Length: 202
Ligand code: SF4
Image (tube, rainbow, N blue to C red):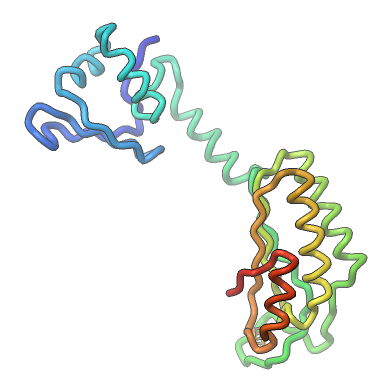
């Protein structure tokens, strides 16, 4: 295999001492220090057989790449998968537009408040399950939102249980949290939410 420096590797000559070169991958954040002689061999495409294990290690860390790899296309593909893919789903269910406060600047509350019911929660979970199954999603993040979400504890409870079901069914990494004004958050509510897997607040 012909290895070369990755286009995303930065090189600092004569660092940390005059006979070495520091490499840093802006993609993987890997760092390595090489003897200048090995660095020269890599640059000129004349890696010695005895240095190949070291170079393969560097390739494993993303500092070197196979000469045939077209890195910019691979990076574009990765970027598009990150931007438009479904490996992570972040969802923000508005469980109610009602709130116990009336902040003047608020855009989230409603004078005729609505509350997400259990049937809608079930649809929500079913649609999430379909998406996760089709796209092989690995991480699911749910942020319960409002209005003041604690005005509809039943919906949070119902969705959180459904999310735990998805976690077990698909082996997901699940994160749940609540955006709240905190006024209705007492010890009983907090302990109940913790029991259904929604212990984080902001
Ligand atoms: S507490 Fe939040 S949701 Fe409620 S009125 Fe104020 S800004 Fe809006």
